[in-house]
Structure formats: C-alpha cells, structure tokens
Image (cartoon, rainbow, N blue to C red; front, side):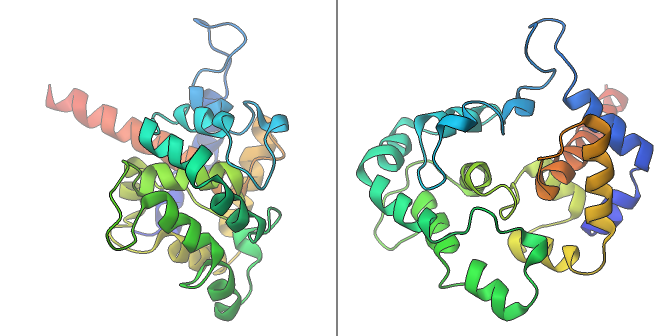
Length: 226
C-alpha cells in the first residue's frame, strides 16, 4: 500500500466530505469545530513566532489527541528553548515538501545533517545517555508540523496503517510520492477548495482525508466484530 493507493481507494467526493465533516461546526460546543484537530493550525497562531515553540504550540498539539508530558514541556519551553529556536531559524518556514526537487536538496533540508532532523532528535531525546521525556515520533511530528506545516508530515497510527508506512522514513516516503506526479497535490487542492481552507498545507489536507477514512474503517470493523 502506498499513499497513492490509499487515496485512490477514497473517491474524490468521499475525500471532500471527510474534510467537510472534520471542519463542521460542533453542535455540542457552539463556536468550535466538530473535531478539535480542526483548530490545530488556527489556535493562537498569530501569537506564535516562526522560530519558537511556545506553550500555545504545545496546547495546539493537544487538539490532535496527544499530550506533551510536563517534563518535555519544561525542556522545550525552558531548558532547551534556545536550541529549539536556533534550529527552527535554520528551517525555512515557507519551504514545501513537494517543492524539494532533488535528492541532494532533500538531504540538505531533511537528511542526516539537517536542522530538521536535529530538531527531531532533540524533541525525541535520541542522543546517547539522554533520559527520555515521553516524546516519540507522533508527538514530535505534531510539534514540528505545527511550526513547519508544509514540510513535516504528521505521524499517526491510523494514517500510517492506511498508507502502509511500517518502519519506513515518513519524510522520505511522502517526498518520493509527492514528486511522482501531481496527483497528491491535486487531491489536496480540491479538498481545500471544497472546505474553504486555502492555507491548509498539502500534507495536512491529505492527513485529514486519510485519517477520516481510517477512522471510518476502524469503526466499521469494530461494529462488525461486536
């Protein structure tokens, strides 16, 4: 299964309807959306600098059903704040994953020596002798996607199952599929236009469609097993 395969199994109309439902106004909580994740990009966005991870950013991450542990929050917001800021300063906030043209450029922006991977390692505490603070790929990806939404795909167990990611490098997988053809960008564009969210990134738009599809499949399987 690939990202292309997963999306082709979702009709264009279904994809648009998934996003429409995601951004639908909540009946139970007037003034907010049906899914808290619909506020991921917007909540406090104007008050958060591109080169800093703020408490508001960590709150935004919680709209995607994860919680940044207190120990990690202290590290990100205080003890490692300057290092986080320095790394973000080296990651272009306007860079789109689909605009990276060559393997050499990919290596510069997302490879082993890139500031993006350095930030990932800092968030996940992957260095030798470092005690973990409860941030793994899912939380790290959501923090980075909040700061660089056009560059970093969100890691999510539902979506990862949908696209058959397994143990593959999600940055590389998404980049390789985005550069195959225009299909993924076209699907994202039509969904954005349908729900009126023109600034939503290609990565996030497709993440919503794939997640909603996977959620529906899981709910159906659960009902059938009961």
